[in-house]
Length: 428
Image 1 (tube, rainbow, N blue to C red):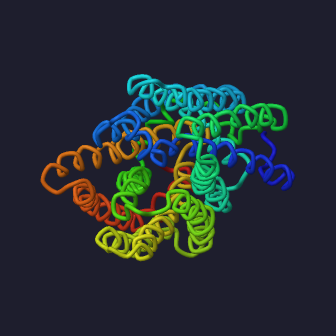
Image 2: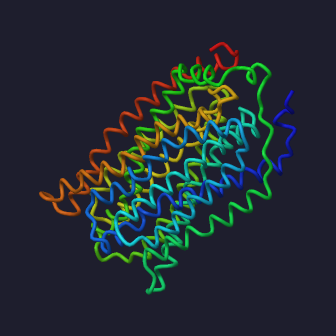
Image 3: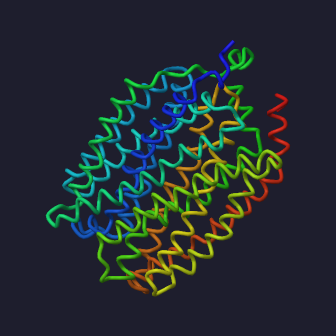
C-alpha cells in the first residue's frame, strides 16, 4: 500500500512544487520569447506576417504535441524527474541556438527543437503534483504550478528589456541570455528532487494502461474541460504572440524598452493574480458546487473578451493596455481548474498520459493554430487594410473561439457534478 499523500512533509511538497513551477516558467520564457522579439526578427530577416505566424505557432507545436504522448507513456513508467531534467536541457539549448540562426530555415528548425524538448515538461510535472497533493487541494496546487506561465512571460519581457536597453544588443543576444540559465536549473532539479511514490490503488496498478485511457476518453467532462481551454487558448496564444506587433504598429513612436517592462510587470502581478485566484476560488467554490471548476472560467471570460475587443479599436495607449490586461487576468483563471480536472478525472495509472492527451488537443489546435491563424489572416488583410488594420481585422476573428469556449465551459459546469461523483464511486 502506498503511503498517503498527507504523509509527505509540507515543506518538501512545496519545494518540489516550487522547482516544477520554475521549470514551467522557463518553459514559457523559451516558448513566448519569439513573439516578444517578433518586430526585431521581422525587420532583420525580412519576414512577412505569415512566416512569423508559423514560427510562433505551427513550427513549435507540430512535434511538441506529437512527442508529448510517447514521453507521457515513459513518464507513467519511469523516472519523471529524469525526463523533466533532460527535456529542460534540450529546450533551453535550442533556445540559445536560436540566437545563432542565420536565416529563416535555421530559426524554424530551432523552434521545432524547442518544441520537442518542451514536450517532456508538463505531463510528468502534472503527474508528480497529483501524487503529492490530494484532490481537495489539487486545483490550488495546479494554479501555483501554472504561475510559471505569467512569471515565465514576465521574465521573458524583462530579460528582453534589460538586454536591449544597453543599445548594442539585439534579439540574438536575448535568445542566448534566456536559454542558457535553463541548463543550470536542470542540474539543480536533478540533485535536489527525488522521484515521488506513485499514488495508485492495487486495482489501478493491475489495470492495463489502454483500459485506463479508454475509460478516460469516455468521460464527457474531460472532453468539456479540454475543449473549453483549447478554444480560449487558441485565441489567447494568438493575442500573446502578436500583442507586441500590435502595440508597435498602433503606437509607432512608443519606447520599446518601456513597453517590455510594462508587459513584464503586468504578467508578473495581475496575470499571476488571475492564475492563482482561479485555483483558490475553484477549490473553495467547488466544495459546495463541483460545477464551479468550469463555471468560473466561463464567467471570467465574459468580462475579459469584451475588454479585449474594445482595446484593439482604441487609439488610447492606456485603454489598449487595460483591455489586453483584463483579458489576460480573466483568462488566467482557467489554468488551475482545467489542470486539476485533467488529473482528478483520470485513473491514477495514466495521469501523465491524461495531461499529454489534454495537451495534444490543446496545443495542436491552440498553440499551433492560434498565432499561425492570425499571422495568415493579417498578411491577407494587409493588402487592403494596411499593417495595423490588417492585424486588427485578424484579431476580430478571435471573438468566435472565445464565445465557443464560454459555451463549452458552461455546458461542462452542468455535467461536472455527475462525472466527479462517478469518479468518487469508482463507477465510470
